[in-house]
Image (spheres, rainbow, N blue to C red):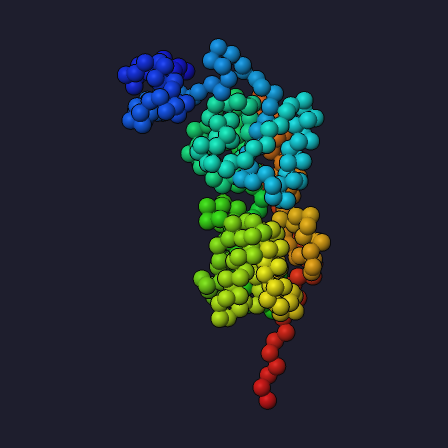
Length: 336
């Protein structure tokens, strides 16, 4: 394994200079930082997150890396991870990936400050994930599919869930169906959109690009995107929000504009967060097994740490939850 001495030698600088550069100190120039970083990358050098003379091989800690710690979607997932982690005598660190490559979360991965990690964060790149995974340091990803000996995938069947949501709207007489999307780089969102497209195609409904609006999986994003839809000259029959938080924000925008759900328009969400059944009207949605995904993810890590062989890929099912936000569309009266 490469040491900082090796990095300094390859970069042609003193060890102290290499250390300053790798810690992003302003004591060295940008050119020197880039030279040292290039040397470190070529040697696959990984900084030790602890003191250099502290050779810890086990931390008894698992990291859960999430895009956002505050969203209601994450509470059940965190609980699933926490229950299994505690039962095995380990600690759990849940951290946000805000900051991407420069975040604390990325340091946990690259510096092996924990014994394993679970990732549900679209702004942690595939490159960082693959570079961080190594023998003895298992990673479980919940929001993408990666091919690596040391990365394990647990996915919800988002494509089928997206299909179920769209088909439910179609079966209730809706043919002009808007799709309020999550972030463009969200793997889960892209699969939900694929399910939406599959359902349209199977029912002979042409896709209209104007009905796809990009949101950000937040309540505020749902509010804003719904206001954009309202501002268009022609309003859809129904809206499929790619998560419940955006659907709840959309409900508020519709209410402000005196558009009744489900009398004037039907809406459906995705996730089945706890709040979904308490809004007015209660939200039809796609239920995904959040607690089960979290508990399975950390269980896989413990199996790997114990030297057991496990599958590299697991898929969890989704189901349609019918509430009161979707209604059979009344067709216009025929002209006589």
